[in-house]
Length: 137
Image: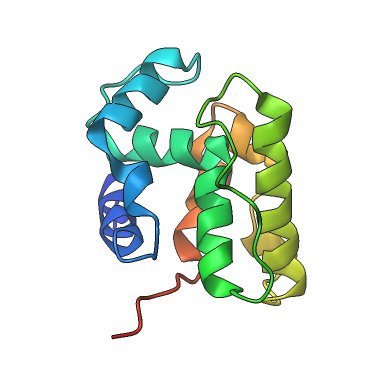
């Protein structure tokens, strides 16, 4: 499966994550893309959309909050902006640590902060395999 198709599938899966729908708002995606020095493709490109969202950090924290309801990260006061890169990286760090320690991912299957913030999709591909929380009906 191509990276493009994998990202489309992941976006569909993310739509089912509790509280994640705010990050899939087309206006937010467009604004983040416009403010980003990282993306040059259109906001409709699912690879770029996910890459920018994950660099934002709070969407990863939202996934983590869904997986660990007893250990919530405070994302409600976080600014949805890539301007504070260190703040974004803090949420990414918490996500990576949880993948390794709480969910017992193998280190080679988890992207690093550096991989996420480089303009190279090799590390980004690793992001396609993490578990997602689901709404309980």
